[in-house]
Image (cartoon, rainbow over all chains, first blue to last red; front, side, top):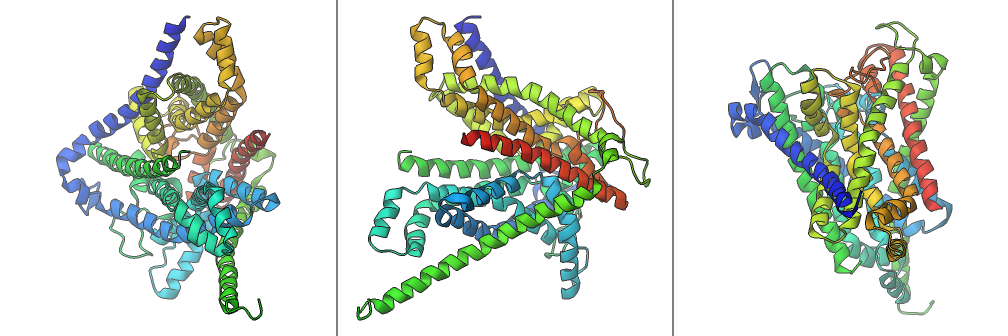
Length: 290
Length: 281
């Protein structure tokens, strides 16, 4: 071994990692070609997904993915911002802080499939009785159940990002504001939140990336229907959940290829969300020389 | 304050301050209550399923009460062993590359790739490893499952190991170099051991993260109702058992799904908390 060989070895490992990434993209593109050839651009907006007649349009799942993620964000944002503000601004020290932090970390590490299990046994019966009382079809499973559990799953992540953003506000700004006689609420809404808003927004984008790609809990709760969902109580599917539920039982090679196409769409969407979130985060950090 | 012309204004601001406090504390309380509720349900429902048979017996034929999930416990350990054997050396070497080329354009590009890998939905990892490993080998296997999980671990471990390498004081490396030690030996024998605890933590968190993953295993390890120690054959895993059992019509299996969930949560949490307390020290 010498310095040169050592560097070659490290360079080789780095290349492997880059090749894994490039290989993912390459494999997804190549594997989805048969379906892309058969369906053309209509693969992206076709409303019918039928393995029997081999028609493959991704629209029902794109809509399902956007609907569940959007509803989950609408529910999770106010709850996570509140939890993040409490963690960052109100429980500054002592056991309150460590209890909250530990709890949030614990929840962030619970596997998706366990949330799915909980959703099946707890959320689905609740949604079913809600659906019955408003006269909707009483499936229980569906868009609403999936979105509710999805919201719970991203809350720990989003609230710790919010806390992180608030903690990074320079102490001088806050001290100056207090010295001028501002109340705590005025400091938070007038100084801390405006300063942290880009980081908080980046955190929301990164949470969105997670919600879009979240698979198991959604697969277990959404009802796995291949129609375009029309209401909160409709059964549906997301890009991820249709792959999870149909891939092993693929009826034909085109069917499998079409699912590779869905995986490619999912890969690209989450890549863009993640890239956006990280760029925003870095800009914020850069602006104050951290 | 009594006669101050600002007294009314002051009261109004004070009220708004208290109102805001309530407006954030109540939703935060709801979040905490919800999270505690989920944890409590996993513990209570899972606790009912635990007995000796649960840990040491195989799955009984469909519909028969009793038996256990030893096949899933062993299967999870098998895929995790494969995964960490691949991910640990690869992530350590990649992190060393980033450490040695700090600030260079290539390292920044590599860091971007690592971050992007981290955002790949785990289901996508499943279908790609299916194409790479299951199709050529013509069989689902513990091996394929382990490879899929190694890709889940990889980006997380690279960035954690890189952070712990960066925390080693530069003077360590400089002192070794000044004594005439070749750079590679200084890095391997001084910097890496100094970062050893961080590397172990990264491995622990990688295992905790990958151990709970289901989606990459469905098309790779596939699942197996019987205990199998063959790395070239399909194996079960704890997350797969939860997914499969809760879809079944049997109450006994539903209870076992909760038991498996409790086991999985204890496994993941003990790794996370152990590492969390180590970090504080």
